[in-house]
Length: 214
Image 1 (cartoon, rainbow, N blue to C red):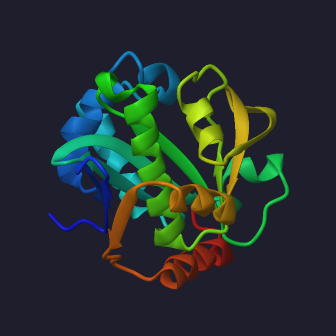
Image 2 (cartoon, helix red, strand yellow):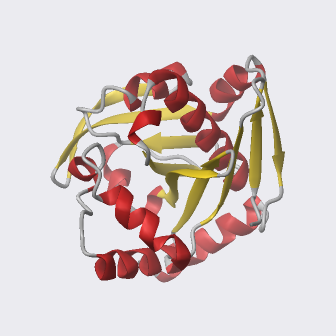
């Protein structure tokens, strides 16, 4: 299994990330039916429909999807997407290399302040480096009492409440410099083996914008 990023905590635990593939459909199907996930994602669908959703996500020109592991256990799913081709662009003044982020933590036992912070910190570091993003934009559901405080602790600023599609959300923006200041104060080490350079990733996004790909 080829990871693009591995982050090692002071305790020795590792958090690693790799692109999603179709073999991940069963675990994503299981997660999407968990009580702490389906009210927010609304993807508690039959297996075949999840398979179609995963295929579309993998092939999308304006987003990338990743599985995250704690040691060797799959524990999270994270999307990095180009805000220029997403409804979120209408809710704030976007800048160059703004990257949207959606995330979920699969095992309910890990959705706590300590494990949740470690996982979300690793996700965010990975996305900043994978895409060379200047800012990461989040829009968690306003009811999410675990993720929102963690994002704020990691340097994210809650800008305002928004109504996006059918979801009432908090618009959260994290700046690269603010986040990396927090990372420098953390007892973690990281290594990256990116499949493509950050500039290549943005070239693909820019082509999708140019041609209006969905």
